[in-house]
Amino acid sequence: MRSLQCIALGFAVSALMTAGATRAGAEDDSLGVRLVNQMNALYGRHPGVRANHAKGAVFEGTFTPAQGADALSSAAFLKGAPTPLVIRFSNAGGVPDAPDTDPSTDRIRGMAIKFKLPDGSEQDMICISANGFPVANGDDFLALLQAVGASGPDVPKPTPVEKFLAGHPATVAFVTAPKPVAVSYGTQPYFGINAFKFTNAQGTSKFGRYRIEPDGGPAFVSDEEATHRSPNALADNLRAALDKGPVKFHLRVQVAAADDPTTDATKVWPDSRPTVELGEIAVTKALDTKKIENELLFMPTNLTGGIDASDDPLINTRSEAYAESFGRRTAK
Image (tube, rainbow, N blue to C red; front, side, top):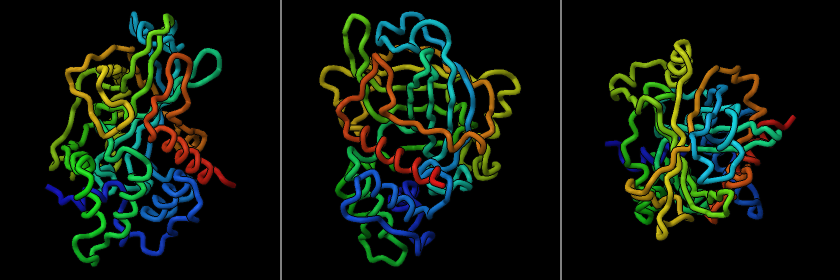
């Protein structure tokens, strides 16, 4: 098993690799700005790419709602005709050319979806390949990144990151959880980080978290096989699969019980909680990632009617950091 410090580097590459990178900005900067500054410090500055999940591949697709999905929410994409999608799969980390199995990714993948709604508006959905999150708020995430940055190989033990992990058991649980390597982005399950409130036409509301599950079930490779694959196998294998037809997922919502926490992303709900089938995501075409990449901004707060953010503090922090990263990579 990898050491806790090595696993923690999945959130940020070693400070040794980025010595001399720009450090965090002014004390009065917002939390989102400070998070992006710290990611740039850890991963280095890469003009024109995201501060995190820098390596990605963009695809086109459609969403077809399941019969009765609008009983959970009155959201426009849950009724009527199929909805066009733009989907970006990605690897965690801020190095755009890092191999899929590079330690800086900690094998965390992302699936961000933009629903193109009939009235011209959009709905965004951002999920990752792990069920849960290492910390409950943005301040702790910044503290984790700072601890990693201060924990070079010559730092006396216990290092700052070891001290952080000692006081945050949820982070330890997250980073030590098994993370097998998928055959492709299309065979990987994805999970919503935060809870959202779903309200139907009758005004009934329930809290839930998204789950995106491959139509044929998850498919992984052994660690040994993963070491011999091409550095871009996750995207390449998905593109190859599209030659045989659409690659499909089931979009579901896991519904919270009355006493399940909805404001702490580290708290994973039991598998016994019911799930509601929302519909089918079909990935249909690979797009020119380099051409479209900088146009895409996925925001957890970009929501349509019938879906509202919970009070989870990470939601606004994520949107703040994503907006800051977008502004930097598109600046002329």
